[in-house]
Image 1 (cartoon, rainbow, N blue to C red):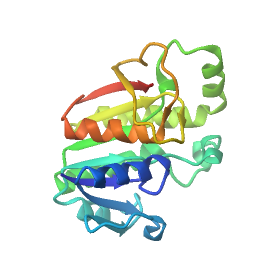
Image 2 (image 1 turned 135 degrees about the vertical axis):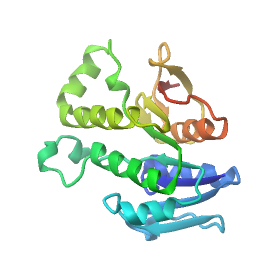
Image 3 (image 1 turned 135 degrees about the horizontal axis):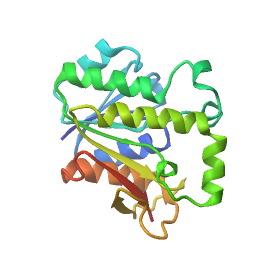
Image 4 (image 1 turned 30 degrees about the vertical axis):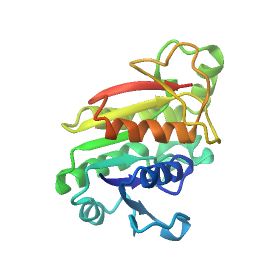
Length: 209
């Protein structure tokens, strides 16, 4: 498959590129700093660009089978008021959708946060309140995506950590029971499995171990 990856230099994006190449796919990484990509493979192409540049992004998307977004803000940005940020997840999701429409790409997989599920424990609710700007941004992002006509999949992972463990459990509409933290690699594996298996079309899922 031909996969277009956004956020390819981040923790999840790096794992996503690695797994996609190991599965034999052709990967186009759309990044601001291609020099940060450490992987070297003849099936990997890095294109310099930003998500505010819809024209360049749409040209780079042409001929792709799916778009996988591993985009996320830095920790400091999560606490910043949206009006004081140079970008938001909601706006970049809207730009991505516009680029996909121009490029005629139909499949989109991206991740959000399990904190958006109702019924979270007190600690998770406290963290959600602390990062209320980020949670508001994620809600806006999800709204933009779910109201589109695309074949989208949104995954809301539980706690994430470094590691090579690829095991995960997924459940439609909620976190799996007694979900434990999972790895960035497992999240990347789920996103790739979703595309390869053509699963979870137009669904929101919880992810944990």
